[in-house]
Length: 480
Image 1 (tube, rainbow, N blue to C red):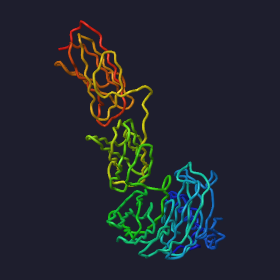
Image 2: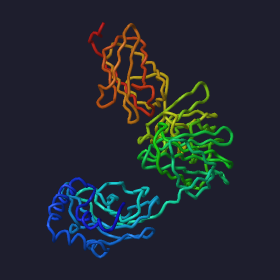
Image 3: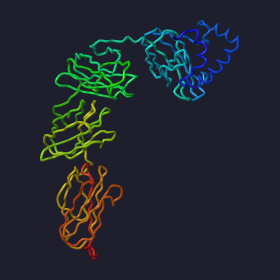
């Protein structure tokens, strides 16, 4: 049992979370001292709160403020600084002691036998015996200083089988899954969390229209989180451990989540250029109809801080494009020349298991001044043209009236270019001879008609390119 009479000696011994280090130094000295009659008399007198070496008492349920500075007690093992408090706790109570503020630190709770009971940024522990305990506030390392707040409370365990949004419940799990009914009054975005220090938390959520979601570690530190757009109705929330064993305190909470922009989500319907919208992905493809009235260049971006964005665009005449990370930071982008028509635009994730908010933006893309795109036709020597590659090779015809040294250069800032030249019994290719990811072919050719194929090294690339053609008459014999 923790008693005030024994607390005097051990407060001197405990510092930070390195209890072994301090106990090793303090306890032998205490034992030696107690062999002397004078030491025994001093120990017998140290039985009142005034004899607790000047330590302040924390009052359960009240906030205490402090600061770790270079003058605070030193943990000689790791160089961190710490400060200590005494706290009186009643038998069979479940207490929470939480640290907040600028200090990057931890809370440690010890009993009167120098037994470390718990150590975390937020300590939760069931008190077996009433009496005085020690709370140590410590920096996480030798560079951790600053002010802090210590909040403590008695946790009231709930055995309720229902919960509401905005009202968390604390309960105890004994290796058996716990089911709670959650009522959603209004459609919207909600975030549901299960937090536990003693086991790996796992959440399952079932609801109207066969709704089902589950999560293991999305809240970090083995805590579970489900964030989703929920329709009104009753949901069954199952709280359990990830692997079916373990027990301890856990907290369930459900909170509304603010939506971006105008606060509206659109997961279907028609979209047009110059439009930006927010949607929610929760395991199923989100599909829109994209209406293109005028042929031109368009850029479609899907961005999200919650999921790995993925776009698929399908349209007239077998048109198909998809993209994963072209916009960077796991965001997707399709930039392409689109003919008039109705396209199916699908927003999803790369792996199909995440969920979260995303933003979809469709914008026309201006071409440089005086630029016209040519994606087919005849090439003439000393010609420069611009084209648009979108996954399919573009072919042009080059006719030579006499033997010539032909130079083809293809460059793009949007994708890795690739050139092919074939006809009259010969075939040549090039990837990067133009420098960087640009292609360049230089070849002596006999008179005749040749096909020039301009494409990307990868079919997933897209964008505008420039193709230059030059041909100089030569008496050089072409390669055979």
